[in-house]
Image (cartoon, rainbow over all chains, first blue to last red; front, side, top):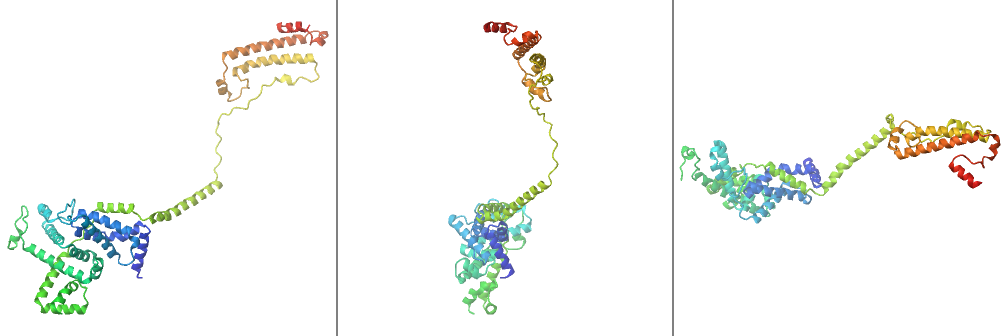
Length: 212
Length: 238
């Protein structure tokens, strides 16, 4: 065993015995990636918080069943299963328009409503983020999960295929179609009419772009 | 490599998971096939945009709820862990307590000064005046009677002091409170006065009898003593 793996094993042993510091040491570094995956997969920060909590609890409860190996893949698999359970329980809520509460990851319509309150650079970043979020939400769930497992989990396609219980070529095909669909949707948005911000000149006209 | 194989391998090539020799074949095909090249360009653009999605942080409130939930479902071995921590702590405390107790045994502080609590002196019985002890054994009966009369008179005089205390104890330090609590009523005072009077009378009669001529001394048991009671008794005896 490499020193790092040995260290992880001792951490895992302590976490299995209920050592809270060990549990935190194993899980807390994963929180941002796990939460981002769940949030993008479910489509709403507020809904994602419940799924995130359920995922972490399920991870802690099942620590004793984890066979030492790829801990990240194991936790993301549990998070994915929690998301799919959520979709089964709430088949109509996987949408950006779901009630977001104090959602920090604004939907496009919210950004339009609050356009006057952001600096221009921040506004552009938020618009791009909202578009990507919208494009992701429009993907089929099986394509979306492959994209998100790659982005936030950093897993290989062999690992993704194993996690999603599909052949490698299927995982590769889903990614291929997802990227084509994303690029197509995002390219169409570029040529679509720009939003008119309250009190601002039309940026597309300033840039010389034609509007349709 | 044909177009179908190229499209199949585009994602692996894009994300760097393709073997080097296969990547070289694909690059060669992309240079030769405009259609595949265009598709690969779209895939790369899509990946570059979507991979720019920022990380999201769960809110502190969300993390707090998660941690509370973890506390609630802590694995059962957590109690054992607590015991592993607590047992040495309590063991150390017990050892420290034993050491402290042993230290106190050897380093006992000086005895504190006794508290001055008024303790009543042991009760002393009423003793006869000193004269009674001084009566010689070889004195005659008349002398004894005379001495006894004197004793009774002196006792009667001391009973005035005793009656003030009610219990007849010698006046000792600390008795005043007890005596005050046990102060007799006026009825007891009057009874004591009567008793004093009777004792004085008895003492006087005994003295008078002892002062009679010697010829009468032998018949002292038959002579009628003075006083109503004794006179009545004498009459009955005669």
